[in-house]
Length: 396
Ligand code: PLP
Image (cartoon, rainbow, N blue to C red; front, side, top):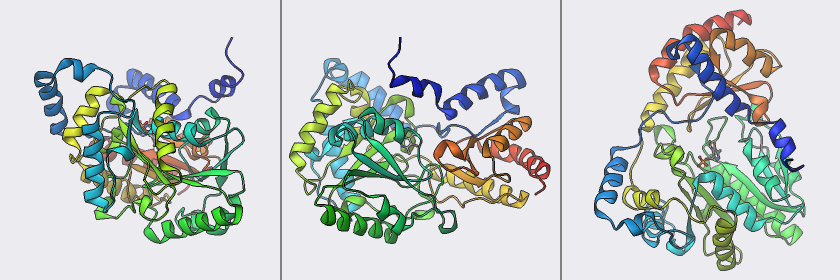
């Protein structure tokens, strides 16, 4: 018999995952080339060559006891120092290995951070539409997710009065994801400054500590050299959860890190607690081989231009077909307005054309759909006539 806490999770099992499974069934039935699966954010761009070279070299030349063994729960010092150095060079920060904890991707980074900071009943604020797992992660520690409404007229930048109104004395954290899944927008520096100002004011007003949790799986996927502000520079109580899942195309390897800056509230206590949270949460430490890979490949880059080109082709094709879309600025998602109010009904209709997308309501963004374009360019080009037929069906 499963726990009461698990029952709603089982009942609401991820729509995205369900769609991914459905895509596999459809591919078997119609042939993979005839199914246009835009459901999941699984990078199609291969990991950079340096990653393979590093794996082979490590396996060939490093001590296997080290490669496959336990290490400090925070991770290998050399990896954490390499990460700190990389951040300092790029963002003018002053981190050392002490500020970095290696994690099992961003999912575990967020869980470790939330486990470290939340007491039951604490509130965590985020901006709609948002990555649906946030609610589950927050509930893991008996917190409550509070959602700031979406602002479609303002390119999905949060309205500051609504953000301020969402913060109460029970607010422990705010989660921000930039570049954003599912909208593909980048919050610019001006918006970050406004968010930081609201948080400073609220901390003073309530005499509380409010953490800004920067969820960063898409940091490196910013188009046309767009700047993604480094949040620790704007707000003292920022903590970061980063992932190499998308930036180095390593989602199955489960590797990422947390940053806890010295200037954040009771930093050393928080670092110690987060290291223990990593252990007692059952992650113990991030995968050892991947940590050693990151130490060597910390400056490696994936082919961001590929995603940028995909986003451009898709955006142009869909707008030409009559759809209303948010222009992608980063990540690899296109956020498109459903031509009917019921986005689930629209997604179901699209399946007739073997087009798989995720309803926006799965991201607290009803009336929209998410199209994940980390697929071959060819798939995008071949899907456009299908989207055109779909547009016609809905009178666009
Ligand atoms: N946060 C966001 C916004 C995501 O989109 C994802 C994955 O898609 C994650 C976190 C989790 O990433 P990871 O694979 O590193 O656990």
